Length: 348
Image (cartoon, rainbow, N blue to C red; front, side, top):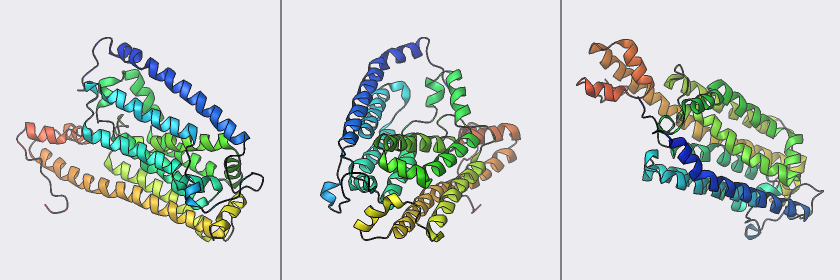
């Protein structure tokens, strides 16, 4: 049973983070103001003909510091480091490495020329940015949070609310719908032409990408039925969404995003070629993420099956064994009963 917080713990944590919350609000207000000024001044060079600034292929000119995104990512990193100083979090050097790697990926996605090419309207570059912010980085951020932290540091009511939001059906539906909406040509055109909407899209990628991973990583427990096998099915669904989008981009024969044509042509591609490249980026990233997760889950399920068999054959109650397998305590249960927890999935 997870340890419960000491009396008054939540109030102390709230007081500790109040100054940080005010700092975040002030930083966000400043960042929004800077973004508005940048938009008014025409500093965003995009592929849309109605905007000032022709696309450039000079990489040295494509480095930038978009104020809102950088502010959000840096504040997120600082907030994590402040939170991780509390010994009760259980954060180790490994967890910090995961989380800060995620922050580094987020910053690289918006500051490097990938971000500049995306704002110009290179669709393939925008897709790289999309998958980094919405796929790779959220996974690393979640891995930076130690398992069991929610049970130690959150109230049951808060955990229940998070569980409702991260329910696999909800998370997958919201992620799929969000992905499709942002890729609608008319919406994509407005994103490219409107700095504030661009910022909303970037933050949306991060938030909803995190939601997509939450039932799989389970820093807050998922439903009891959502075991390893169901997680593999879930990630197969994620891969399928990417496959469908990639095939539409590859084989449609139609360039959907006219606003991006000028930037693509500046880099020596037709709009249709740029769209096909974006499909390739989508497919490769989904293969790395989804197939990587599916492979790990497959071997985990095989190991769980072998360990379940050992425990049941040793005379332990099957329901108790299944519960231990689901909640990751089967190895401790085996050790407590003098049963070897070592498994060689697919061999024994």
